[in-house]
Amino acid sequence: MKVLVLTGAGISAESGISTFRGSDGLWEGHKPQEVATPEAFADNPALVHRFYNDRRRQIQQATVRPNAAHQALALLETALGEDFLLVTQNVDNLHQRAGNSRVIAMHGELLKVRCNETGEIFDWHEDLTEGTPHPNNPLIQKSLRPHIVWFGETPFYLPQIEDAARQADVFISVGTSGTVYPAAGILSQTQSHCRTIEINPFPTPLSPKFDETIRQKASIAVPIVTQQIQDQSIIRG
Ligand code: APR
Image (cartoon, rainbow, N blue to C red; front, side):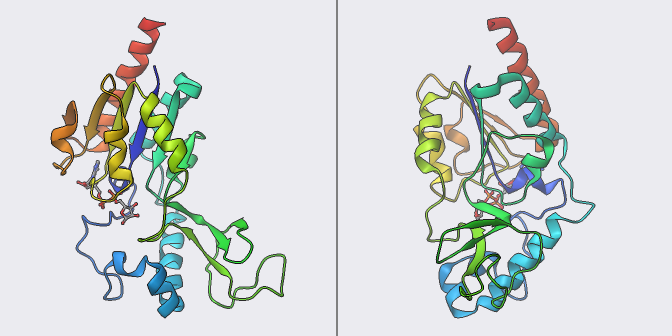
């Protein structure tokens, strides 16, 4: 039984990381969506760096930890191995910290930066500024950017995600508003035999298209659903 899980900001909300559209909070007077664009980076790189520096610091605070939903998905991966794939829109590292390794971070990762000139990707835990030197080539200047997919850019690994959607027997969408494509289109790439489940305390535009919608917080619903899947896969052998 192949299981594909898609997660969004809602799964990390209970770990203390605010969602995008749920919070009415502006960041320094800007909507986050307006800072997360290539145009914003070209116009005002210092502003965009500050935004991501704040977020990078936030996910490294001691209080930000994987919650029961992340942990349940790690257990499911252990049980299913290669029959499990996790696609996340989140740029935090909470799935990896919980123990998942079969993770596709389709919108990038806060704890990585990329060189615009060479395409190299570096692990990164510190603040980044325009003046931050390239880690191994001082001749390359002002080339580093957050390894994040901004609005208007193409998410990573789309062919692999589409393959996984077509092969899935179970598709679980957790904590995503279903408003940002192509992630929101993964549901429509699943085959008719695939059982589709949405976990979200609130309805989304995609809710009517799921076989089952569970109106619960991720930390409550994900452990229950993943346990059911493990029980079924044991019965089916
Ligand atoms: N458990 C499950 N779902 C929750 C919880 C919770 N405890 N708390 C909130 N939610 C739900 C909200 O109801 C909402 O539908 O999580 C969803 C979060 O939606 P968004 O903030 O829009 O986040 P997401 O869907 O991940 O956004 C997609 O948009 O801003 C870009 O690139 C960014 O990856 C992000 C993408």
